Length: 572
Image (tube, rainbow, N blue to C red):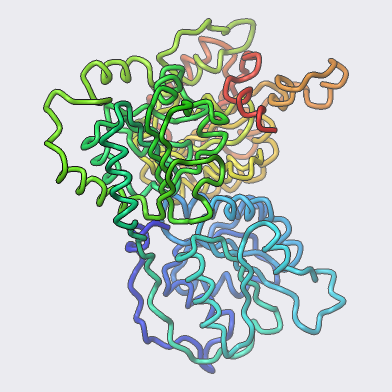
């Protein structure tokens, strides 16, 4: 959670007591979480968490009933990323928690502040088949294990878990033994909601960054997930220093209004963007891991380039590649003090632009920084549509105010690179754990977090069918949503990027599935695209507006293996 997002939390009464003979542990936990700022809960209710979910609801939180705990976890994750609040996913003890593990691992690896409120077996239930070591399970996937230790400490334990989620940006698994749920909770004050503190860089580090920017002729500023709150400050620094801007995929949309924005750095880059970043003599990264995805295994960093990485985590500095300078600091705070010092030491930027921000570069960015500007041979025909043609047409037809979410697979470069987004709240990619099948869950969480925009999901047939049960959730919740299924009747990554015989490939190819018909069975609207006429019909349908779930089953032509995945497989 960013400082700005945390400030959107309500300010509860610091000294209000929660817990008395009138409140059970379940009620105290639910009340405390709501007082601290929880507004949305996702989950599947069982006997273990039934009373806790109802306590959250009774104190004002909304509840979205998922069809599977794995779906609920990623819904909550996406909601948290886009709302700036701490969400809750709630599960039954044991099997309910294990069902949610992949979604929890994704959130933990993405450092999403989130509470997993789960029941646990009681102290005496040593023979229960529900019994597992939930704390060890949480730790093994990178989450923080917390628990309610006693009725007397229920409020304090809950507040501690919430504080850890916010201040350490962690996913916290809060286990509540079922033999405590109905016991009277001890009275205790609920502390004020924690407010993250921005880390200010040292004066020495600031001076070093200023000198590097002054010396650079071709600077590029790259923002990652950890800088999504700092768009205004980073753009001001780019304008002051003459730098171009780019983002990792996780921060897509952050600089959408900057005419000198190169788009996504890495596998989703256009050829122009990749070449321009590779020519930079200074790469200044804010909240960005500089990993193999964002830097194409280091190929986007020239041998002579200075690399400066700014992050609030000491362990993140230089973790994926050597850096010239690592700066411990908040992205917004660091960008602001660097810009201020830079402006004091230099003349105002000339009106005609300087360094990278010139009229000529502006024209070049407009002409080549988006994949949709690149020429290609249209493969549409014989009952299939080119995924590029599909994506470009849908991008033009969809409303500008949108949230684009994507699943994982061979197809995913198309929605990521071809569908434009209005800002950093217009894109959500749950891919830190690299699991397929999370896309529909992500879209539901995004639609709940940003209801004023149309949610658009790009998914493959494999991932969509893996998560198909949650289509009922999207329909039941009456969510305005467009689902684009890039359907190649296969697990395309394996088909295109493994060297194998046709017989070996039989296990990743499937008979054609009428996904549009399946969608209609769930109560959604379904359309099929096999060529230009079908695509025209979909475009016309989108122009009429979407206020429910529309599934587009696009039978796509083989791209011979997506450009981005060929790059990614170098790291496997």
